[in-house]
Image (cartoon, rainbow, N blue to C red; front, side, top):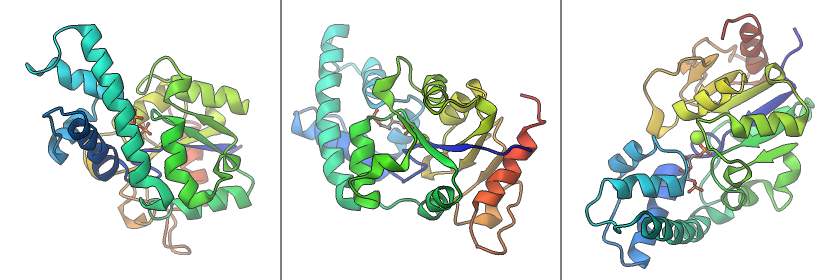
Amino acid sequence: MTGPAALLWDVDGTLAETERDGHRVAFNGAFEALGVPWRWDAERYGALLAVAGGRERLLHDMAARDDAPATPDERLALARELHARKNAIYAELVGGGRVPLRAGVRELLEECRTQGLGLGIATTTSRANVAALLEGHLGAAWPAWFGVIVCGEDVARKKPDPAVYQAALHGLGLVAARALAIEDSPAGVAAARAAGVPVIVTRSVYFATGELPGALAVGDGLDQPATWHPSPAAAATGRVSLDDLRRWHATGEHAPD
Ligand code: XBP
Ligand code: MG
């Protein structure tokens, strides 16, 4: 057994619960600021999360509205403007560590650092949004925590396309089987699996139920070991630990795709 050489983190929903009270609220703030009468309630936003990427989500929503601009060019221009405003509001909302890291995330990040396991980020959101979220928690030197950071602007296609994972592997010089991804959503799992990267899932509020085919292990949060399948050996730490990740990763080495 060689074990994983790096843990690749999804951001939204995995490092922190940023969607319902972060991105969604910021989108609504952008609608209001630009005099657009649309609002996304928590339920509607949950359905829209099937579309990865904020600008893509806006365009998808506009396609179903009869009060959206008439031409594709006008819709794209509005989506760009709304998205830029949304991200400015989002940075305010999450900046300064105002949205906490999910329980157990910091411990696992630190365990990886202590034990020499590489860390990476593979996300659909922008680097500016990742910075807004992480600076308050990890400090201005947050990028130094990660051997590779791949964000939405670095790839041509967002999750569930494997591009962010392929770029992260390339950046770390690893074959897929030596990495382990941690995700919260079906699109994220699909992206990792399409890149051949083994993946575990820490369910988030918007993806609390539902099948996640291809995941090595699934649970409700790193701090809730009793909810995970397969079971972690949580007795010692009361949380999912790097040893659990190594054990799950080993089960994937012989599993068919
Ligand atoms: C989740 C997403 C993102 C965010 C919004 O990304 O789908 O689109 O909702 O981010 P991940 P942007 O879980 O891969 O981090 O508005 O910056 O696209
Ligand atoms: Mg996610």
